[in-house]
Image (cartoon, rainbow, N blue to C red):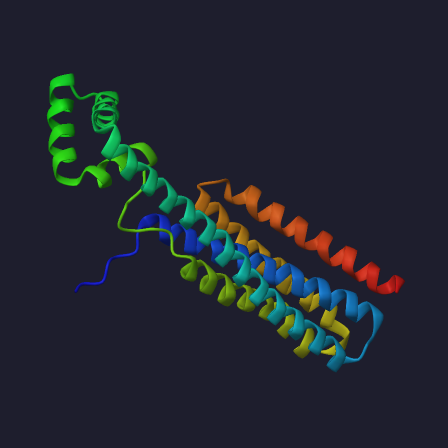
Length: 225
């Protein structure tokens, strides 16, 4: 049996989870690095704190994405169950929805009725769900894809600041980490804008500002305590 192709919604959802995971991984790890580095100069302590946070963030983001997408999938299944009932009890009303759908696309009434009749006779449930909810019955959202994407991206996102803080020469550790963070959040801002068809410049600048504020706040919290 041939393996079904991943739907566009699933692909976009997986990419979204990956971008958000990477961004959270960057900000949480750099936040811990800066707060701990402000409180102690012990490189091993700073590294362990950063690594622990990286792992905790990755698994937390993964679990959150799994729960979130699972809820969306449950909603999709509930909608399909409702449509199954409506097709048994109000078939003609459901057919009218399909007719109206094609008429709104500019098809003449007679042609819309012909299309609706043929589709409802062949694949009534598929047609009703697609027309009313823009859903593909064969491709429910996959929570595992989002969870794995978020797990990997959150871990990778936190790696660059952690590597910068760990391996940069002592006088340049903070500067290297700042530059690594700015580069990382700029990339996630670019990707999020591309995925959402948004303004790239605005998304990149916004992410950089948030990253700088995150480092500033955590550093001075570390200095206070």
